[in-house]
Length: 81
Image 1 (spheres, rainbow, N blue to C red):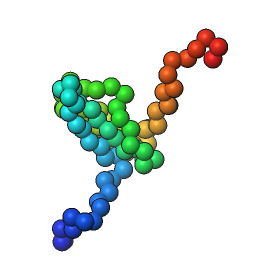
Image 2 (image 1 turned 45 degrees about the horizontal axis):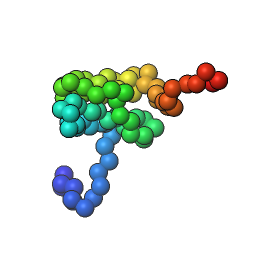
Image 3 (image 1 turned 180 degrees about the vertical axis):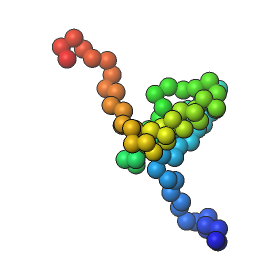
């Protein structure tokens, strides 16, 4: 199988994600759900291994059909809401 040309864009499979180290030294995980929306983990992680474990859990939930899109955070609620 020939290698993909560098000019060709390759798509990650649904459920794929990535990690990156922040300036603080903590790790951020981002995950593409089955709805093709890239989402960050709700928190950062102490280690890259922890961030990858979160990604694995998300991929496992997609594969088993139990993954649900998180509800949008809209900031704190006021008393009138």
